[in-house]
Image (cartoon, rainbow, N blue to C red):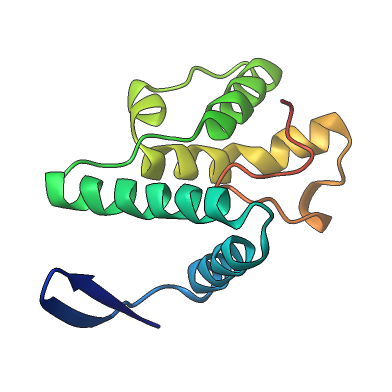
Length: 130
């Protein structure tokens, strides 16, 4: 997948090496922005998300976990009597690792079917507590 960036009189075509699931999600977000009523709001939301990601890269900082990820991690920690390491609450990559490591056991204990149900460790599990 490539992005064409236009800034003033400068243009650049950037092939971006996304994993397949990221590319699919991005295409879904773009389609929503095109079809959503009111479309201006959906486009603004998508633009803000992309700008935030680019700003993080330019600033050299890591992304924090999402609010959904934090809520899910807290629910998992309570159920499994775990301590959440500080870096898990600070960095999305560490959060993703924590959720990937403990979500299946949490789901088993809550009766969600364990490994037969796929867990999205990015924090959008529909059965995760809110």
